[in-house]
Length: 70
Image (cartoon, rainbow, N blue to C red; front, side):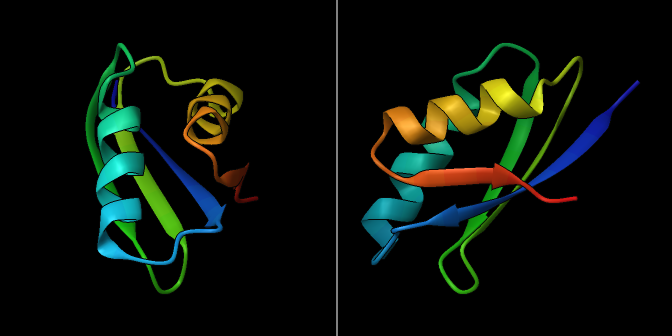
């Protein structure tokens, strides 16, 4: 079953930042697609067996703050 998780992402300032976050998210097992937008700072991730905390952690590892949207 496909799951969709939305994250707020803080600290991105350019398209390079967006590409970096997208690449990090798409590197997680189970992620099918990650759409990241600069304004507003948001990532929408779709895939199988996704963990919101793991998604946030990988974004934080790239240098940006991320929180699952409720």
